[in-house]
Image 1 (cartoon, one colour):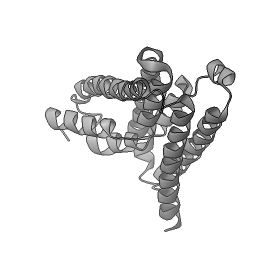
Image 2 (image 1 turned 120 degrees about the vertical axis):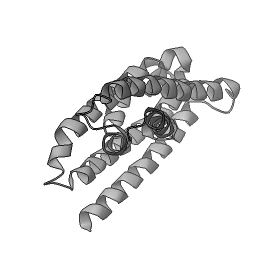
Image 3 (image 1 turned 90 degrees about the vertical axis):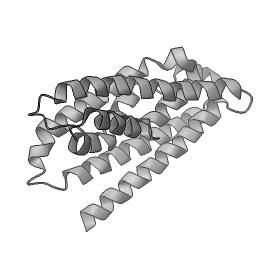
Image 4 (image 1 turned 45 degrees about the vertical axis):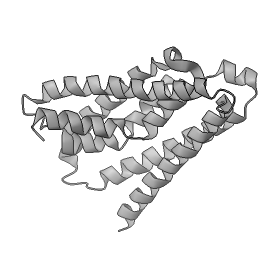
Length: 199
């Protein structure tokens, strides 16, 4: 995809769609508010940049000889998402003092989930221009801007829901709802990886 406007629209649509990273950002916004969650954008950006770098410069050449690598990465993503879902569920069951001492979504969580996010595969292999083209640098700058915009939008959505329905949207319910969503994503990734590896 070489047309810059088409590239920007594709990235916006992909990053704006619901997914594991956006689920965490929305949960953080609902739990700690807009200002308390904005620092998580650094974890998202770092995760995507590291994933794209590895995929475009390391994994792409290896895929010629090892096509199962993508499925192994999906399985790893599923395992981590399931671990994170269990932890969020337990956070939702924790007493208030424990919740205050340990926020349910951490910078490291966002970083690892984004690093393993299958959206990075689509970006690296179907959306970004080849690394040998000069257009990859402006594309990267546009990508970083869109990460900030979409991530902020998901945090704002979570914060809005959390403040407008405070009586119904408690920290416990947000944590448990997020855990269910992450577990669902884990099931999808695991099913896809298993089906491909056993085919």
